[in-house]
Image (cartoon, rainbow, N blue to C red; front, side, top):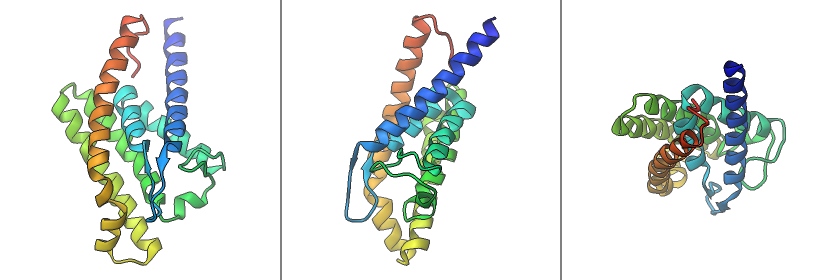
Length: 183
């Protein structure tokens, strides 16, 4: 019976975090570069930090799968497979390793390790985003970096740190409420 409760809890939390990611994707400030300022980075990091590497990555995967089949969950209420091959599609692909590394970091149980691995995940996400932006836009790689990544780095690092501390608070509240460990 306890195993069923844990399975149900994990499924519910994975779905809730995918939904939270979809909602936070809509909170955006469009920019002329084509790369909007969103809260996706915060939500992706929160998925990993709160749910762990496997379930956090699964929650992001559910979000991406919903968007791929056309559900308008991506920034600006967009969806469809075309988003994955567009100028900002590399960031979508990069969300998976970011969530995984954030989750891996939290498993280590040390704040600095968690933040370091989360930062590595963020770097992978930005690298994937810049690489695809470069391929699709036809701009040089340095200009692609300056357009699609550099303006967002500080906001994304702050988002990552805030997500880590939010996850600690949420996990403590859930434990206190008798819901046990999520991941």
